[in-house]
Structures are given as structure tokens and as C-alpha cells.
Length: 201
Image (cartoon, rainbow, N blue to C red):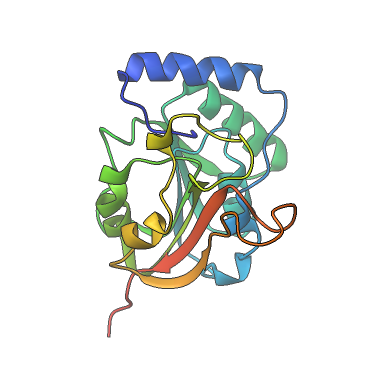
């Protein structure tokens, strides 16, 4: 799901159900995950939070992780279940409003958040990681070069904001190119973070 909204859950669910019903194909997994699979643990529990159609969840399951996916939209979850079955993958799914029911602490070795922003959830997301667990986070930035993504700036990250939101974790990877240099090249419009909860000493 690409933004956290102020509307009630029923209105949000209807909005995203309609969007996912109209979507004809599965989007690609988030670059922050797909380009950094070598940073995943060999085994463990993974969560695709606000998963949408579940491209990240399917990729996590392909890597052999015990994968869970949550989204507010029943349509999204149903389509993910169908795709997982067709691919011979197992993904635990739940129709879940993550703003009302965030993950519990120490539950996952990997959490992926893609194109979803609720700043108030960040402490719960970080706490959901087990010691040594890894967060993969990618969403839209305000310093963009196209109109891709939400038009409401409240749902876009300020410059370096994702670094600040992940400040209590160990930053392992960060990318946010903004409008620097040749804007026809590179990775624009988004910020990407990989951060680790400190392992037990």
C-alpha cells in the first residue's frame, strides 16, 4: 500500500480494493530488497508490511524465509494468495490494518516496507525486529524528478528523513539521490534504507 492515510479504515480499504482490482500485473519487488538479497539471513521469519500485491513477500519466500504478509485490502491479500499458490510458495497472509495493529516486538528477522509511510509506526517496526534483524525500507521522497507517487507531500519523505527515522538502528545501506547531477540517470524519486537491530553481544 503506497501511503498511510488519514481517512477511516473502511474508506481506505475501499480505495485500495478498487486499485488492486484494476491492477493487471504484479509490480516488481522493491529495489532496496531485490538488489540486496545478499543481506538477507539464510533462515528466519520475514514480514512484508502493508504488502499490496505482495511482490516483496513472494521474493522473500523464494529465498527460503518463513514469510508473512499483511495488508488492509482483502483484494490484495486474495491476489497474493493466488500468486503464491501458482508459484508453489507458502506465504502466511492476514487482512490487517497495520496502523491499528502494528507488529509485536521481537517477532521477525526481516521486515520489508515498500511505498508505505506512517511515521508513527516506525518505533513499532524497529521494535518488531529480533536482535540482529534487518529492515528493508523504500518509499517516495519529496525531492523527486517525476510525478510518480503520492501528490500529498505528507506521504513523502523529507530529505534524509528516513535516516532520522531509522536512527536507533545500525545503518547498513542508504540511497537517496534527489536531484543531484544528471537526473536522467540513477535511482530517483525514492529513498532506500537497510538497517539492522544491534545483535546481542
